[in-house]
Image (cartoon, rainbow, N blue to C red):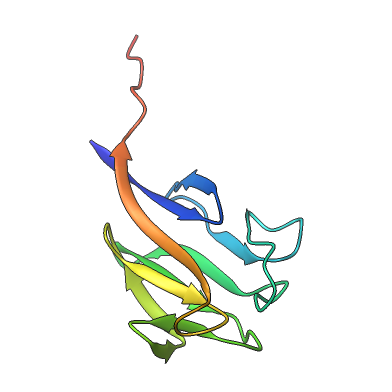
Length: 105
């Protein structure tokens, strides 16, 4: 079994579909991206309808998928979005990783 991992600005987080994640410059965010152009509360990442959704939460400089500003995008392994600018914005990438083994007793 695999799980989705989000990587940005040198940080990797394995995503748990039972919860949502706040993405932004705020030190209290679940995924902190301390880069100019990224809003304090830039986006939310959540599992909805069987897929992961990356949704801009009204950021000043936007979220971009393939150079196009988007409000909401379904993400999967291989998806890349940029925060703050269509070409120079910080990259947020998604990949798979083996899920941690669970012990059965």
